[in-house]
Length: 115
Image (cartoon, rainbow, N blue to C red; front, side, top):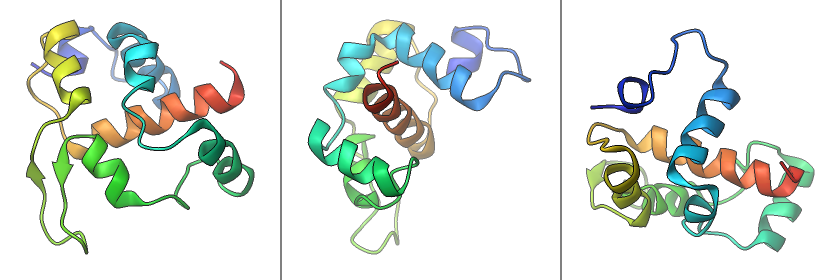
């Protein structure tokens, strides 16, 4: 089951709204603990890129539970605190690396923006 099915997310829901809904279902404090950067690093990075593309993509991938190799040449599920939350909180067992990275980055934006 994926998040759309588990949380009955409408297909036309806006990206940020969708990921904020998932973060709230997982517990924002729980997701916050999975972010692989400090709040200071996030605030500094946000100044020049609100999508955090200026921070290590490999660290985002690992925190999302995937090893993508040093140069992104593979994508292997290794699991993480975040992927454990998916099952514990929502009974979700179908997800991708990009879902995890999107959740982490949206949670990071929520922190920096004070949402």
